[in-house]
Length: 222
Image (tube, rainbow, N blue to C red):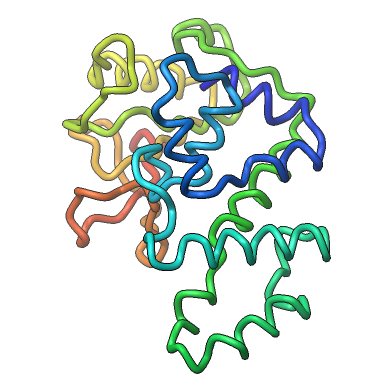
């Protein structure tokens, strides 16, 4: 993941455009034994729920949306604001008769590319894969922490994440910093929820109860 982040912030707009792939290309990349960082990003951006497993669009409309996204990029060179382009508006009118208007309205892939481009503005940030313990000497800072959720699957981590050890560390760090933790719940009673995203839901929270909302936690009375 660190390599992917560094790749994003070091490349230009033309490279970002190359990250859109068709369903066929997606399948070919997925089946490759040795994948590059670019392959990883293409699977991430073009997959449903960013899980790198299933293609973003159903088989029935995948070619339609892929071709439309490519045409908008080539003719108008935009990621965000694509709904204002003549190409998009023409396509909406054309496919109304086929009752595909709802399917066309969101070109999620272009929105993903816009987020990638925004990351490039962070080119002064240095990515690292160090343990959070490496930052124990930080003082006078605002620490926004997004650890693995308690009792969640942790297939993407080399070692099992110890939530309680992390909370102990965060509690100590809060003595000299403003510490904010993003999570659905925290079992450690030293922390309390200070904000709840009641309306905003993550696209990555599949499998969790729909009644659960992501919250921001801080040390009590901090």
